[in-house]
Amino acid sequence: MKLHVDNVTTPYLRTISFELDNENAVILGSNGAGKTTLAKAIVGLYDTGNVYVDGESVASLCAKRRAEALNFIPSKLDVFDDYIDVEEFLELCLFNGTSAGDMEEMLKHLTIDHLKNSSCKSISSGESQLVLFAGGLLHNAALSIFDEPTANLDSDKKIKVFEMLQRHRGLKMVITHDLNLAYRLGYRIIFLRQGELVFDGACRDFFDAANLERLFGNSIKRVDEYFMVNYQ
Image (cartoon, rainbow, N blue to C red):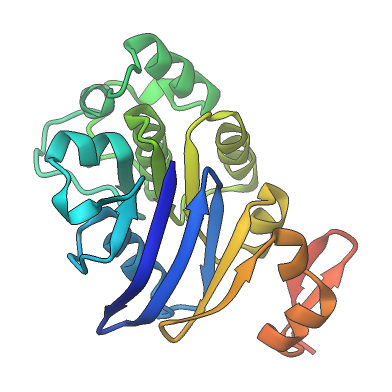
């Protein structure tokens, strides 16, 4: 799938342009940089009219075609039915050829199968994060955009999310603040600052020492293969 973002401008974004041609990507940037706004513009939640999938304007796609092509998975699980449980929520996410068997396998891999009959409103924030993530994979769009998929997760669950991202065949775009996750995924990096695109390129180029210093000054230090806040 080819995604073309052409001079997307909103109150929070300044003429953002790039193309992804069957590539995975990570969107990085500080709080308020415009990462989530960009994701919403890509999937058509903000109608800028300047986003194209395989040459077709996202704004012109019918609902079914848009759902097949694009899916935005937010950072917070929001359900409007007090009684819907985890299994029922995930059944609603089955799309584009996924099945109940896929759902069962995913629940087991993420070790949340014990939550199947729990109310979505009763589970913890970390458990909600995993349920949202599972639902995004089960939707199986051509491009899935995950907003902070490892937020609120302990280290063990972060590893499981990483493994599922690596295994999933569809194209992914991951919004994150976690430089270590971005580094290990190895995806193309899109870095925003105050609504502007200030880096777009290969993972290895982003994590080059000179580029990190240009973007972060001395606030980030590399220790072996890890990136840490430099408090000194």
